[in-house]
Image (cartoon, rainbow, N blue to C red; front, top):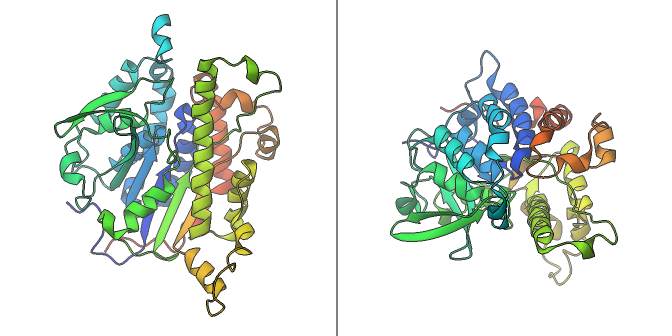
Length: 390
């Protein structure tokens, strides 16, 4: 089973997909544009994104897309999943059951089983390496399920059915109930991987691919690793003055989940901005995402780098090395009136499309994804990383 080209010295390509519920439509539209660039020309060596990317990771709704791509599905198939089955998946629980979860997990599980069937994590039908992020509430640890035979947990995890892992990764508290299944002889309960600092799994994906202790150990460097990170949009959780004190415990629970996910996205993007090379034309987008949530920029930290460092150390060289561990491309947008006007979407209400369960806004989410793709995704983004497998 040759899941990844360890025998090839060509640069490696990684894809990370954020969580965000039905806003996965946005990520799918961006990925559709990437697929058009990479897979639709007559002389392309890649039939699907699972052929191009060596390692694909996702959290929550991103885990659905990631697993589908790793299985060899076309982006249009995954987009149809959201458009055709989105309303069914977000089927409300009967009234009393909503005290535990707003939506029934049965339609979600039924659709995951329909798509992934009895395919296990270790299946040789997967075209690429796969990372699925979930939160194990039984142990209170973040769990990273990877199908690399060299991963130290592979032996115990390889036979877990993919639909179980994805159901665990999508079990957003207040939206869907926790998911319980056995690993080895131990029983565990999991919730959404977004209820952690890994709703944007970019940094963990990079570590899994390059840190030798994790089993793969690909060589780092801006010319050796491309990591494409696709978001689902973000909206700051602003509460009008006087309204917060009227919030119930349920209101605060929903607020906490959504705010944690947005903060996690920003934190991960900040980490990536420290260690990665990003072309100047792409840096503006990252700055916007970080500034929106008051996170410092890389350049803000450079003045601090020399504090306490011996004079014989070349601080500039150290910073240069640390900021060139990979090439990083990030595609997403903030949900604000100003940003939507810039995208030609002034008719869309940012508040309406922000919730993870905004199934009534699917046409608007399609427009947002298409606008991000037009604005941000260019063929040159992949130059230097178009080597075919030998």
